[in-house]
Image (cartoon, rainbow, N blue to C red; front, side):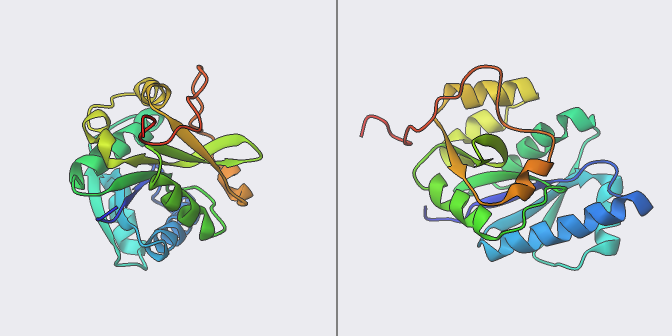
Length: 194
């Protein structure tokens, strides 16, 4: 990879007011972890959440992107699409929810290393697939056209997806996971014919 990968941090609508302070704290920690892993950082959020982030933010290492109104159900896919569109020269992208509870910087380092050899990677703990999920630059044209969770799962079924076992049970705390209804194509390298 000759350019840096980008971490796309998706922020839900509730990241404002008193109930959002824990989320903002978690988000600030996630931004710092992404920077430590040598990732460019894009915070993608609805405008109200971005206003709260700017008031609370302790980090200047993240760029921000305002997200058009969307349901929380489609937030991750909308954030991924917007983040990819805003960073087209990136060598890859990691979708990371703002409320993920990664406890170890090694989680992102392991995923980043795996993305050097695979089109799609995702964290697993005890063989349970979870976020973060990473996508190689070769999938740019697919990612900018995603419009639903279903489309994301279809993409992950169409291309080889590599699970990366991490010693970080915090990733299990997030409710969304990248396992679609159909079995994933696992273990293949980016260029199977090579």
